[in-house]
Length: 339
Ligand code: NAD
Ligand code: DAU
Image (cartoon, rainbow, N blue to C red; front, side, top):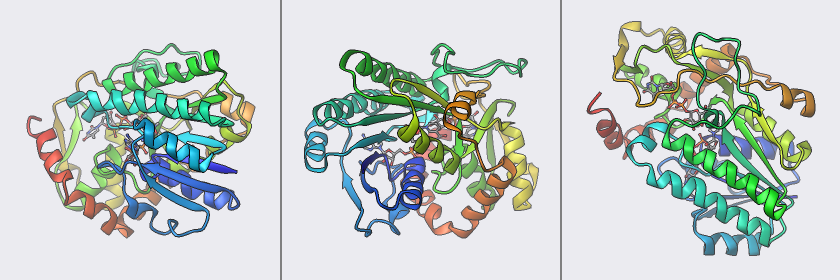
């Protein structure tokens, strides 16, 4: 079995590569990644020289390069993680999100059709459902919740999802889609809330909390997401959408305070800054379908996962300090100048 993992040098894609190598050591893994600011070959350094791992630097929206790769490798399964993934960046510059997330998906599916891929899996997000009110804890996103997006990022992911469903209906491409809640864990780029707070708190820097900090996210340890995708590509029904989440809702303020406590840093570092434009209030996934159909369950509680994650960032300072000291500095200054 040969699996093409796009975006495999990013946060979730790299964790998925590790998961597959551990759980399916006989599979061949081809990783395609453009190595944008979010992709890091350093993350993959321990697996790149394995005989069943191949890395190719390419753009999923580059039709020629993608078709050439499919022609050479003939993957059985494609799992598409490659994307522009940060909401704040999509508010500053939507264009690249449409190109990578929608057109890139189209190119991958065209190549999958041409080369008879047995399963095309699209890694989507719960953000395509929009948000839920804070005062209705009884409401959850199911697979039937209408698409209703808020940011250019989520609109681009929703556009891709619709295209994936259209390729299934029109061309009978054997697709599946997963929509997961917020991930956290090792190799998470430090522009996202949890690694941002850990890295800044360690440097005793102010911790920017948007608005009141009452927005709720439903956190899932990244390896649980990877295990869920493994179940879907092997046992999921073609044409179906699967929601992935573990009922771990926390306000942003709760998350920040939990991290501060573990690092033994003072809450006085918290700084309330201008809110994100269009900021979604609450995400909460109903994962019943994953559990009933595919027998998947998350294995890491939030308390365990956040403790492991903080420990990982403490033990792997080299990995994130490289990022924080590079180009990312300029981005951070620009992004937060007006907050
Ligand atoms: P990430 O930003 O950490 O990684 C994205 C990867 O894609 C990087 O390695 C980058 O180099 C690569 N990439 C970007 N543009 C590319 C292009 N044009 N061609 C080839 N490679 C390209 O993102 P992530 O957090 O790992 O998210 C992975 C996927 O999971 C995304 O599709 C995202 O929408 C989805 N998702 C993320 C979360 C989350 O909490 N992070 C939750 C649900 C779904
Ligand atoms: O729900 C899945 C989504 O989760 C994925 O599809 C996205 O790719 C991923 O980036 C993530 O989106 P969020 O916008 O929820 O994640 P982020 O880490 O950017 O923000 C989490 C919450 O924390 C959100 O309510 C905004 C807030 N926040 C974020 C940052 C970066 C802050 O308060 N301060 C910050 O500095």
